[in-house]
Length: 387
Ligand code: SF4
Image 1 (cartoon, rainbow, N blue to C red):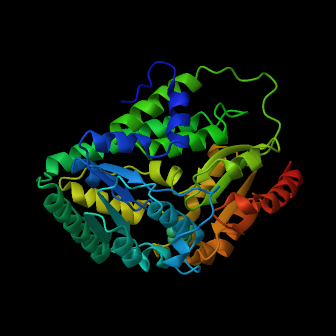
Image 2: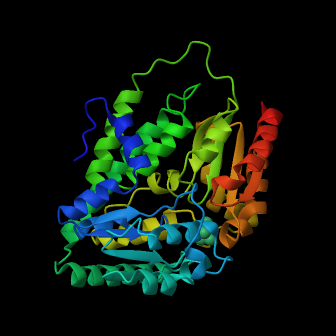
Image 3: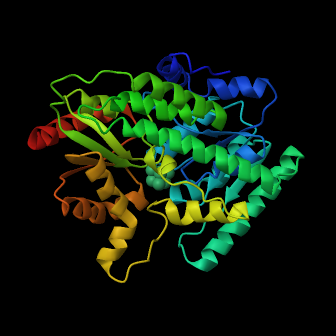
């Protein structure tokens, strides 16, 4: 069981970061069902309501893909290939099941490769729609109900609306506490470094919601008592934008120059924690609206504006708010090779953020430390330019 109210929150985060999945393995041994998921579209509230432990899957940026490429084409994004490689090498051999969302081609078109190769007792493809109009919300509710039914069949237990509502409350509280921790990055210099924050985010996504909440609460209590140096921070304040960046390597490359990573728009970071599920009479309605409308992903078309500028504002406006609130001096947009959804959006994100006077460095690369040296040079040149 995690303990984090006694000043060891950061040590625990470090442990769960470096021994990723170890707590889920323990819980499995204690009789819990563990459901792996990829992407911020994994409806964690429903897995929690089913009594299962949702475990966000990650790969290992320090390990080469040695087995996965025998099953998956190399045009699949390197993140998905690396996680799959880790899975078939046994990193997640304790999983009871997985849910993959209809997000991008790299996930969508590899569903059968994952399911046939891992052959887990439970498998579900969540057919998430890609537009946000009313019929799509109704469809999203239907596919969430289908997910609920399949989990009921798998676990042999009914998932009541009350259990879903309780899980919604628990995950909202988890998000609220994580946002409190993020707020400690607003100071100059930030009270929590980008590398520490990454470890906390990764640890949190490997824990059941109550343990994640306790961990983040403990870490926040520890960090808020730190004293700020009287001279303030000297390096530029950076925001990192991208999909699943889940390792400190690139963050250490940024912070090693003296820059401070103060905010993110990452799928394991602010995307997970910024928008709550509204408590609606039918709890599935609030979940559908949060995942389809509030969560801003490049695979969901947000066509709400009357003009192109209004549409950009609806899709990326939150990033401008982050820039103001966290006093961001520059943004790094990191996109994995072969990631079409993020790749298509690069010109729009870049021009939108730059129009607010914030420079953007765009990087496209692997999910691997093997190419980090060449990235470091570009990061350093960018940071020197804005310092
Ligand atoms: S990085 Fe891009 S292609 Fe890969 S899983 Fe994420 S959205 Fe899909």
